[in-house]
Image (cartoon, rainbow, N blue to C red; front, side, top):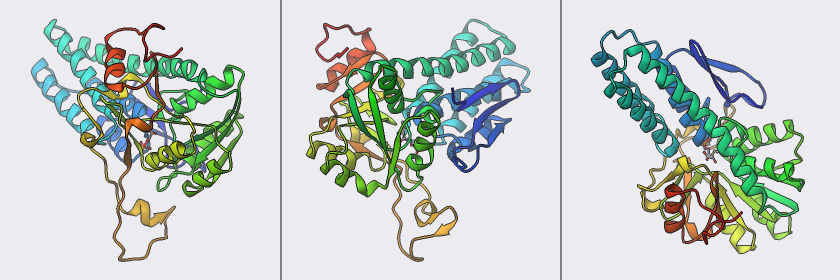
Length: 358
Ligand code: MRU
């Protein structure tokens, strides 16, 4: 499986996603600060992968701590959590992973664990976050496969693949699951301006897996749909509000509107760690704005006229009524999302739940 991120004794290692597909370079982060910088500068990106990176980064930082007493160690721990929290604001998996590490820390400290024992528990839980993410993606793949047409022409946006997770992918996990279930699949990857995650990353990892992939520029999706070239859309998510409104890579909303116009099912695939029940609707999701240079330049070459103003939101919000279903590791949830998403956390849903699809 594609190695997105791994923990080694003295480092967190990740493939540099800014360099793909031209170069496959692995970055070794030796401190928590280096991991935080890697998240901020998008060496690693994609909501679940950001969460895993933060957890590994916190565990690494604390393993290297020179603090002797538990009080100093605790102060350093909370500072490291803050550092991670300041990297990217939209992907809720980041905050989910930090909160989980805080709970592990608090439980160990309360039980009177030594610094070394706390370090061990942080390491174990960070690895568990990684491993659980792969398992969730595989479960999403199996659930999602069931709603993919037998002869599927799938459009996806950005990269919600192995590179964006600990492995296998969410939206691309559904594609992989459908192929494993024997369906015939061809994929259209929106190039995804301005960072080009679709052209560079989605196409790279799908082609590497031998999956037929056609890259289109973002403005071609409507025409392709009108010609009958797409019969299923699946995308990932950075944060899903309690009512199902979904923040994902900028351009996702346009794809959802186009899918509705052409009567094409539009699915979101994401683990429960992406669902934020504390955010009631999409209007409350913080949207990251990134550097203007991502829009003005491509690979160092200036495209936009000097002096023009630039707007560069990294994400948009797709209102829940455009979403046919939300594919998670616990099944596929549907309208009314306010009820079905809450139920997803309360229990393991079964076939009798109206919002659950097997
Ligand atoms: O800015 P990015 O590349 O981190 O944005 C990634 C996306 O929007 C993905 O679709 C989302 O995080 C889901 S990844 C499984």
